[in-house]
Image (cartoon, rainbow, N blue to C red; front, side, top):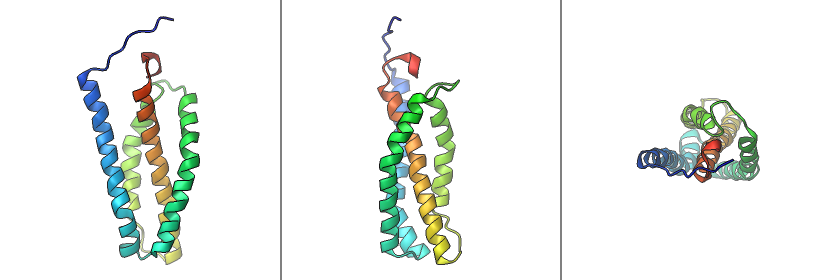
Length: 144
């Protein structure tokens, strides 16, 4: 099989970088305001929120490589990476919105909701990150 030379055009680079610009803006907004929201508005103690964040990062250490394997083994009709990016373009804003919509329920429920939605947000962010970086490092058109 002959390998083609493929150069990324300016328009494609601009679209690729704009994807990551929006993704990183959302990441920084969540990282800056989630702790403040959970402690000051929801009323969860900083100790509990810190534990939720720690557990989420530990899960990310397991989740990220697992999803990388899933993406590598996926063989979807519309490409290897694009279906994931299409899915997450809707899922990430929805989960991000839910992250800041903790219902007015008893404190145990608030903590559980915050923990589940924060971990889910991290997993959804992984879904946006892995194919985006993999697509950027892919060196031939066959895998894109």
